[in-house]
Amino acid sequence: MNLTQASKLLVESHRSELVDHAFGDAEVYWEDDKGREIAEGYFGRNSQGVDFVDGGSFSSNDAMTLRDLGILVASKRNDSLDDLNHYC
Image (tube, rainbow, N blue to C red; front, side, top):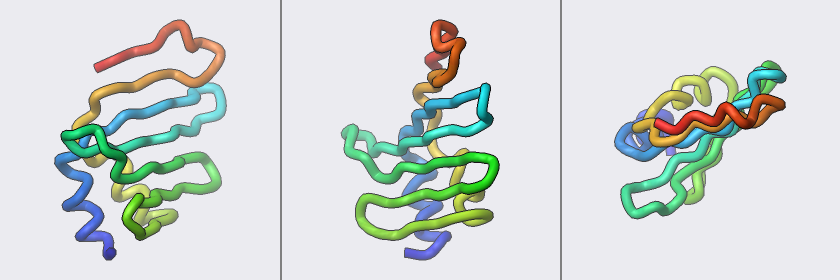
């Protein structure tokens, strides 16, 4: 899978995020419209990566290209202020 194929797969997916504002990192999950996982990613200060269930992995700048693709359906905090969860 190349970056263009990965982008096309994620652009219409449902994206959810678990964000740690204290450390500045995030875990991101993409699902299709039937709730099946497509990919998951980790975005931190020193590393970024996206792994697809059906194969294909992207890191660094390529992963950052995929970071915000998809329709954001949930964003939750994963830090000491977890009680301030926010759902879209």
